[in-house]
Length: 114
Length: 109
Image (cartoon, rainbow over the protein chains, first blue to last red):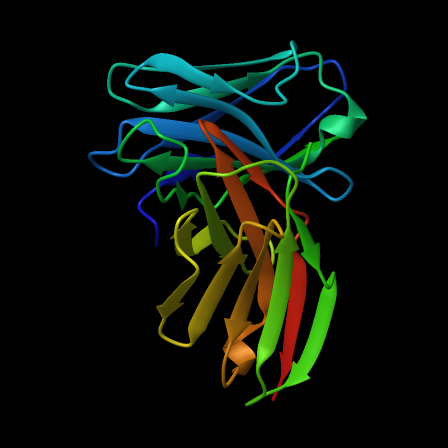
């Protein structure tokens, strides 16, 4: 158990809908990262937050947004969902803001868009 | 887009044998990390090697880094059935971390 929690575990929704994925980092970790893992694209870095502020941006679509709250939990919002958004979404956390430190991954949220 | 490319894509060995996976990358790096993922689960950090290091050990794991060839290898010695998983390298360049496509390792009992 990494100490990172993600909810929900599974999410099934329809195209055009909007969903919110939630992540709670390990106790004491200030950085939260979001990743998308799909069969065709592999593991893609989406975005990083550090202590409430956006720190780095990866291949995140404009339809996706994220935020980190004062209690350090983070939410990833996916809107106007398309079939291709079906994937595993992972959250990871680390103690500081540098990408080079060890990241601890949550169990993931499996999103299925029908 | 991915930076690291693992080789081979899939590897099947018998328990007790050694497994070697390779990772090649394109740009300069600050460090390179190896992660393991059991099917459908989150990634677990295995080892980090900095750009000024050439070799690192952790238990049955040995990682080498050759920055001149832009490549790294992960060796798992005396493999066990429980080592069956996908293994990913991740390259870190400034604040940018990129994962490779992974090597799927199957260890047969």
